[in-house]
Structure formats: C-alpha cells, structure tokens
Length: 113
Image 1 (cartoon, rainbow, N blue to C red):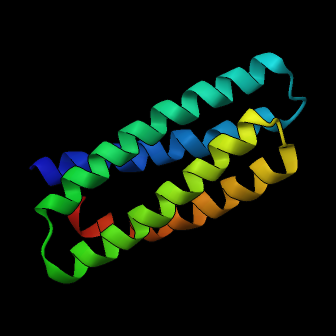
Image 2 (cartoon, helix red, strand yellow):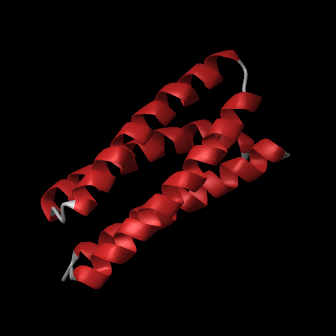
C-alpha cells in the first residue's frame, strides 16, 4: 500500500513540476521565484517518494529505479542552476530532459497503480 501511495505522489509531483514550464512565457522576476520555489519543493517530494519506493522494490526494478532516480536528481540540479541564472533556453532544455526521465519512471510505476 505504501508503494502505491508513493507511485501516485511521484506521478502527481512530476506533472506539477513539468507544468511550471508554462511560466517561462512572458517570464518576469515573480515567475522566476515561483519556478524556483516550486521546483525545490517538488524535487524534495520526488526524492523522498522515490527513495521510499526503491527501498520497497526488489532486484531488477530496484536497479532501474535507482538509475533513473540518479539521472533525475542530476537533471533537477541542473534545472535549479538554470533557474538561478535565469536562463530560459537552458531551463526549457532541462524541463524536456526531466520530462523524458519522468516518463521512464512512470512506465515502471504502472504496475503499482
């Protein structure tokens, strides 16, 4: 049951994180702050739920989730840096990369939902 809850939160957090990309149109200082704060918040939730899910998994799925979580963490750090430097092109690129990793994670979560 815990894994199912984590899977739902991961899916929701991922969707909410990716929705922040919409703030990059007509971006101003207030929008950058919203992106920055929400990216950190969603990243924390994703990290906690993915770690909890990994600890409950077995063998092959555990290894796949661990690798994807590492890639996601790396990309989230890059996104955080891009948001701090206010780089719209790099932020868009990293949102796209994060979306790809989240799709791969989502595919592994389907059996849990």
